[in-house]
Length: 278
Image 1 (cartoon, helix red, strand yellow):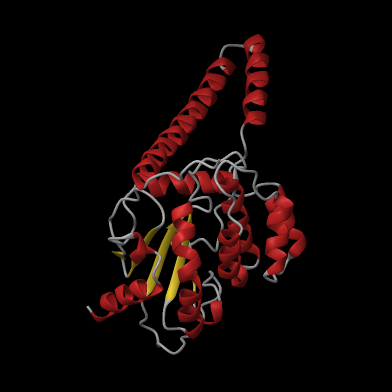
Image 2 (cartoon, rainbow, N blue to C red; image 1 turned 135 degrees about the vertical axis):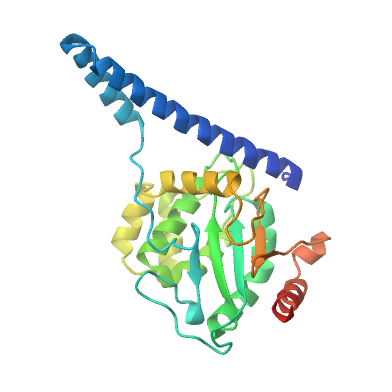
């Protein structure tokens, strides 16, 4: 029998624990590097030991990936008119709403069941607004929900791969990931499955996308982005991320008073309208 999914309180505690663990791992890595350097200062014999120690340390650590260029909105990607991505070299043309449209920000974890509860009923509405140019949306993937399949980490890496290599396919891919979210404590999609999901939304640069997914190119970047999101005030709003999904419109948080509100496109549309009017 599949266990009940985590409560929001349990999810917040898991998020905090994940951030603490990642910070501790970073500190351990720094201490190991300092130790290797200190050993290297002791002479030729100890220098050999230091080189061996350094080799072991280097082999055990994933080389940090360069920051993905298209995740340039506080570790998120921004999508505009015609579902085109904002990139360092391209800005989508204004659509029906002109240049001053509401901006939706969503912090999410692809294994988070509450994120799926929000995304599935709301995604077509959000996609329509964005495609017409009457809103923009920023997606900020984080990874802290644990599961046997490691889908949270695998899917977030795949999402960043698509954001970098086929950014105009990102929002469609984001939706497909939630449509294929595995149930908790079950086996999830493989990297090959994730690549096939990407193909299904028509990504460009297929060969590079597959390599990026398979080699987990952005795994370490996602971990760092998750620590930033969980430990620092969110840019713009100054709020703290205590669980996912965390949804804002023009830096104002969407707070659902009931589960029905949270899964209601009409309720979210009402909130967006109220923020825009105010």
